Length: 154
Length: 125
Image 1 (cartoon, chains in turn yellow, purple):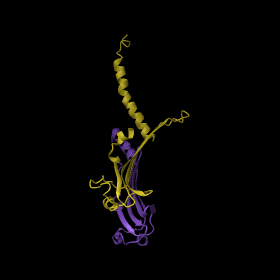
Image 2 (cartoon, each protein chain N blue to C red; image 1 turned 45 degrees about the vertical axis):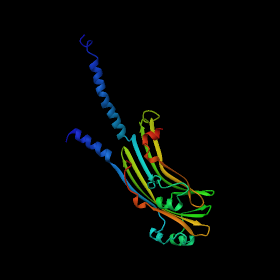
Image 3 (cartoon, one colour; image 1 turned 60 degrees about the horizontal axis):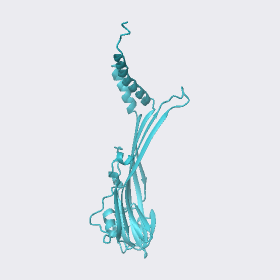
Image 4 (cartoon, helix red, strand yellow; image 1 turned 60 degrees about the vertical axis):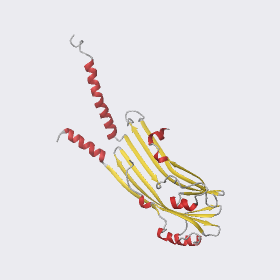
């Protein structure tokens, strides 16, 4: 009778207290078994590309002005008459999370989960010039300053 | 030594065992930035440019002539391999020179950027 009237709640509480320990043990065994891995990469290519100077103006700024301010471009593009100077810096961020449970001895398959994500952002300035070397168009993008997480999921 | 200390020691050793790698890759071209002062727009010819700096990495055909591009690269890589995590960082920087040459084979403009000195080892954070 005494056993039948034993309260249930403390038993459940004990089970829940044991749960975090079991979870920690499981995660630790996965980690130590080499089943969980994390990889983080960063690649920066090129030097800083500064914003467009305020004194630059279409129809006035020349090739010499641009070269004096920005130096040698990453790329020169012939546009059948006009030509473009392309300044660029790329910034790569990559991450990979891998989780697998080795059950091949017990089951025929081993569950495996891989999650990977990469984001490549650019700072770029493009100047389009007439054949005589006068600025006809310019544009700038500061992509590296954009937030990593929000930009990735956008 | 307590049981807890031993377990902690094993965990720390397990997580910190691994290796670190430092790499340096160079795409070398033997041009000297000091020689750049000898280039005079309106006077220096295309032949003199190639004599001073060697063959260009790239020649781009433009409406009013050509552009000679010289490019070399230095990349520095840092990698850390631990049991659980791998971190890798690459920094790639370039030395570049560009010469605009008109239809008479004379340099009209030139520009340069020497940034390989700024390539650095580091973490991906």
